[in-house]
Length: 617
Image 1 (cartoon, helix red, strand yellow):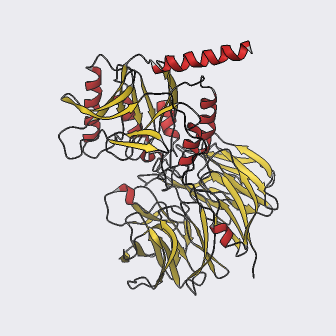
Image 2: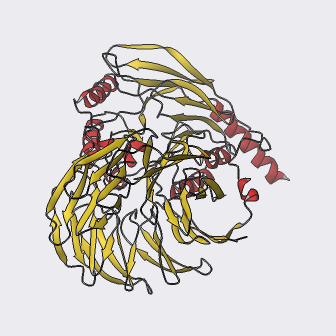
């Protein structure tokens, strides 16, 4: 009884102590977007650094993501160079711009800044921040599975009733597909506030009863200077004021009451809806495997082996029969490359800057080819040749059996993150440098280079896998056009944005139809033709706003695709009806591996791998 009383008294004193925090001030910066064409973003951040250094009451600085515009190694190094001029400690996490277009698959952020998460204590308050993706593919925000596991350990190490301030780039709401995994955890602790960026505006928010604050972008936008926020932690509150660097501090615009938070553990909030799985009961998960890290690629199937890589740099092999783990091969970087299998070989790229060939049966290394940067692109194997692009501004051909370099094209200006296609002796692929390329299969010489005319790198035809029929290439890109290109000379035949397709495309088995997934709930079809086409039919599927690059695959009379919300669709293109849907989780579905219309291997960003079986009526 005495021990219980002493423990209760200690917890009470801790709670009182935390309620009497010594006042201090910290700077809260977000969305610096280093990498602006005219240098204004860099000037804005330098001005902010000078302003903070001119003050004598800033304890530390926190930065909540979108530090760079495209996550390039040069942008990251420049951002760190500027931030290293701060005279006070600073703590930083990435945003979607730092990881979504990253040439290193997000690895560069941790390399340059030392980590993509932080946890530190100041005046008894624990500050915890972590990354939120998405990585390499367009999708909703998503706190990586590995970061969730890390967060569990950090929270478990807290002292009783210790106050916590959590930071993320995204607001912890449904713009982050696994927001509930964060709030469900934080609500068990004395969480004082959540700080975020992303919205480029100062805004007081609430995340499932947890007070939140979104901070403005450091960019000047249409004003003369940029800005950031000062957070004043007092005995009874945290007050937020906007600071115009080297000019003035505006009035307090938001305040959070300091108190020991006790959340109602039984209170219900909106959660992802899986009721569609009850509607389409003919679709069953024969097995499910949960990886320890995100999966952002399409599994390969070789006999009874399902092979896929994850963001921890592990290549996993599962049994097609029961989903049991058969072997694991470790690399030194995240794997975003969808493996290709041929003749007992599994070939893939890694963020560690190497291309690997593994014995697909045993998981033993056969050869390794080192590139000059991360290899995020997926390989194509044709006969005994491997074709693959990376982030070192090159595209190469390797001998399948030895890994020997056959040829190298070095004319790229950005990374390759997708899968090339082979047609009539030409290797065709896109890169994040605004261009689609056609190279000679035999020697890698440039045959032609195509652009949609946009100067914006984000509009590059880099994420989609082109489809080809009768000497016409069809691609879609973030400029929301479908483009038809002459495969012989790379000339534009026609373009149309009548359906606002984005980065998901597919083609019918007979080559008569090109399918596209739009951003507004709709699958569309175009007739293949050298003459300009408009949509022939549209099917409203019910998936809502959609922007992930999950290709459409036709097999045995059905078209299959996935969505950002973890749903797999099967539609009948003849009747233009939804055949079935199945929700796996609430994160991005990668392009599905369709074995036949009854069996599909599906992987999701959250690290789920599932064998779906469809019972036919």
